[in-house]
Amino acid sequence: LPHFSAAMEHWSTKGKPFDWKRASNQTLEYVTQLRTHDPKDPVPDDMIAVLVEWSQQRVQPLYNDISTRTYARDKMSMDPVMPLEFLLLQAMSKLPPVQNGTVVNRCVSADLVSEYPVGREFSWHCPTSTTKKHSSMQDFAKHGEKITIFNINLRQGQGRDIQKYSVFKQEAE
Image (tube, rainbow, N blue to C red):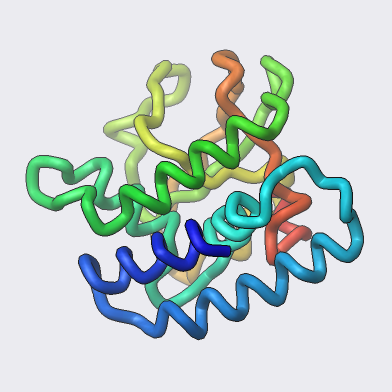
């Protein structure tokens, strides 16, 4: 997985250092399992790898770093995650869009009710993890922590179902 490995090394070198080789090897093992079950999957292995990494819950998760950097562009460089985000967007483009009108859910660890009142329309400006199963959000909420739950009606043809590639299939991501 040359593109994925190079992007992981770049992320480790330019961002917070971590054992990218170990993480890449774990992801490669999972990609091999997926490929064994579906050898004709049209998504290339490098792109499957980044979808798998997106679903990982590591000490420094990819989804968190991309989201944080996207929303803090004036304070943080996108450089560490740019190769992985590019590969992620390429992978997403290989998947069919989720049907418009599909409702997905997102749990955020903060009380954002005053910023996002019920009924207000808004867009996320980066890839965002969501779930089709409302019950899966309990896994993301820590006991006693204030959270905001978003029920999102997808209407722009941008959503993609990555459950097939997720390490945590029960989350219906």
